[in-house]
Length: 402
Image 1 (cartoon, helix red, strand yellow):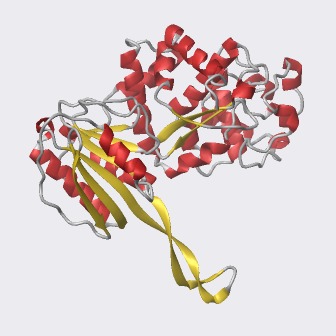
Image 2 (tube, one colour):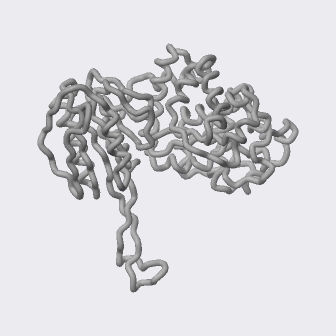
Image 3 (cartoon, helix red, strand yellow):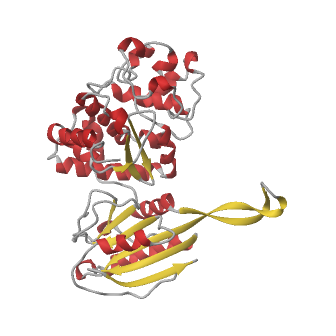
């Protein structure tokens, strides 16, 4: 996409930063992904990273106030963890229930946005309440699709009139954004997604000087309270949600093309991970490092693994590689100042590409502006997260696991 095609989106973000800073700061933390679909916008949580998708052509159809409303709509889906909470529910009805739960609190939404009154439902219900009521509506019984990707040409981002939106049940049951990518959120455990959103809310709240949208006040205050998820669980689930899938032969199942004379294919989870170790003096907290390393090795030994350890200060000073069951390596100490970029440069050149980067650092040093590799920043007690993106884990909360 050309920079010019993204100008309407960038202008909307600037307006949000100026007029609704919490939303603007929250949105800046999303990963962006190219998208050309049946709707103007879409959002999901992919490998523990909230991801924004905008179709420039369809997005430009809407007025600036409507564009702001569409982005607010996406933000609320993520803050309420709607993609992660769908699970085994009826997809189309859950998607619609999510829209009904948030749309009444958003001004300037396009006319075709679903509203509770069009289904003779009251405003102000929770998503689960709308979902249970939609299940009882026989006229919605045929809404059995797997998302919003299958649409007719009449809904290609074109604006509707209020009369059109109140037509047949199939029209009324449309979501304003594309939910077909919500299945990606199933790869990330719910409490890990919650931890990611918690940190995004905390960052947005701090950078907007405590400004909070009124209808989100209670939820934001919940996210501002200290998390109670054990760090070992966060680490394990982060690694588990980003592990790549390999393939191996098996004689227990015949090959679908060649029959039982040829071994079939079985998917096999293996860990392809980069560990960045900041060797500057400021991160030399040995007991905490050891507790973290023990937990990491325990997780790695429980599955097939490829682990690359990069010791770096201003440059990469040493590389250790393990395959199979990693063993404990000796402590390496360096020194000097920190530049966080070489580890990411190294990882981007690896083949196959790593599923995730875990970086043990104090965070004080230049870092990439963005990375499409899921990243866990493991920070020393006095450290700071160097960038908006990535998940944060603080060493000060670490204690040896039982």
